[in-house]
Image (cartoon, rainbow, N blue to C red):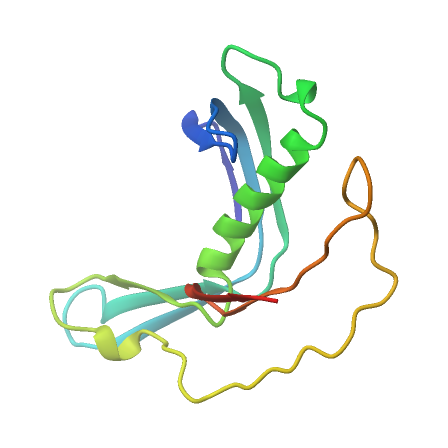
Amino acid sequence: MQWDGNPSIILDIKTYVGVALPVQVKNIRFTSIFKLIFRPLVDEFHCFRVVCYSLRQKKKLDFTLKAIGGDMTVIPGLSNAIEGTIRDVVEDSITWPVRKVTPILPGDYSDLELRPTGVLKVKLVQAKELTNKDLIGKSDPFVVLYVYPLRDKMKKS
């Protein structure tokens, strides 16, 4: 699938220091391979009740960022951080094992949604050759773990 669009999306970015930064996202270009599931099959027109879709893998997502009333290059790394966050949110919301269910005919299709099951135990052992990301002094690295796609179950080391 390839999609080229020219929407004008305005995001109100809140910083840790309480400053709001309106950012415009434009010129979105997206190329990827989708997994499509048409089911259950029926005798009526459309021949199926639901379309389920997800990305097979993260491929290519390009867009243009523009600060409204300012310049994002004033704060070093701000543009890259915002771009990375947008890219992660969009791709993570539809990349397998996440499955989006779009009903064509009315009905309850909650059984077609994928949900995590089971228990996963993780033990963080070691990190090597970490890059210092702080501008001044030493960085204080940490690991953020969460059950994909449930970011509300996030744990921080």
